Image (tube, rainbow, N blue to C red):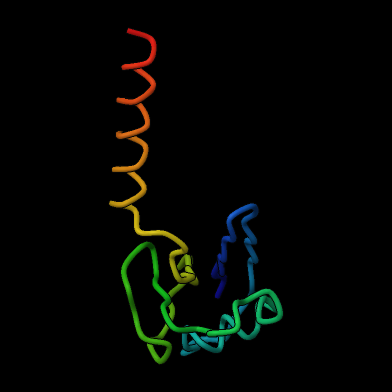
Length: 95
């Protein structure tokens, strides 16, 4: 069975295609991918398949895309507010 294991940092994305045996778990597929050294220190806290959170013990299916999620470095809502405020300040300077 073929699956993809994906992990993205702020600057790059690692995609590994691996052959796994029938009945393989998400955790086993990640370990088989060889991505473990690139993972954050907190390890495998959140994973998903095609954008849906799942457990490490879930079984994978042919063609699954296993995604390893990292902790956010900034709150997305706060970031959007800062950008909007900056645009308002920039617009006021021009006007």
